[in-house]
Amino acid sequence: MAAHLIDGKVLSQTVRDQIAKQTAELLARSGIKPGLAAVLVGDDPASHLYVKNKEKACEAVGIYVADHKLPASTTQNELMALIDKLNRDAQIHGILVQLPLPKQIDSKVVLDLVSPDKDADGFHPYNIGRLVEGHPVFEACTPKGVIKMIESTGVGIEGKRAVVVGRSNIVGKPVALMLLHRNATVTVCHSKTKDLPAVCRSAEILVVAIGKARFVTADMVSDGAVVVDVGVNRTADGKFVGDVDFEPVSQKAAWISPVPGGVGPMTIAMLLQNTLESAQRAAGKGGH
Ligand code: NDP
Picture (tube, rainbow, N blue to C red):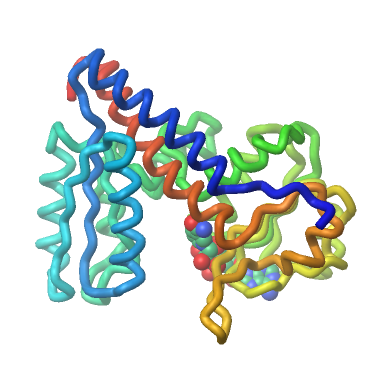
């Protein structure tokens, strides 16, 4: 393999160590312990596993977790009443609503009800607007992690040709905005993009978030590119692979992130970071 690995496990551990230190300092200085409310509705096993991992990661760095597991039959009004309560709970600095929500619940309405001051996932329209303006408060965890991964390579973002494949509200668009604010020249691709391989080959920084196993092949990557693979796909034999064909692409790229062990661990680390930063802001305002 020619490329250097962007190791999300190692990088996220470094971030978590810093968060643990800052959490302890905040508690000693102001008596405030960062708190995250994790709201999970229904029985989806994957969602339960994701939330469990996030809660374990919080506890390991000293973040208080309020665990709210609700039955699949929960009504929209019941969930909204809980969010309203959490918005007013001084011990809570971040609210995580695990998606997907059951069919009877309108996710958009629920996510919009989360206070922009506690929007640890960075999905609220206010926080998206702040990002568009270039004055972010809460930034979505996966895009924020992607940027940290690129920055960790030491390859400067400013002035680079960056290509983002995928334009979802939770990954592609925010990643593109974050790269733009760091002065990259950004192209955003999607399912209607013409001659995607040629556009990808123009990239010095290539971020792929489409959800198609091993879609980006070596002929789509230029020599020396930085490649970050956000995709998580399960193969027929039960293995997890990314959107990038890792082995051949790593012969051409200068830097590449693996799946698993890439963006996933960084996403969790950024959730912790967002919760800590929210508690620090609350401390700055003199409250909890
Ligand atoms: P979405 O399904 O919301 O968006 C996929 C995007 O990819 C769309 O913009 C779509 O284009 C584009 N796309 C699909 N097929 C093609 C194609 N053939 N060529 C070019 N573009 C294409 O996905 P998400 O953004 O939510 O997630 C993307 C991947 O990232 C998934 O595998 C997901 O599991 C993973 N993920 C990983 C996270 C982590 O923590 N590691 C967190 C979040 C997501 P169009 O808009 O035209 O339809």
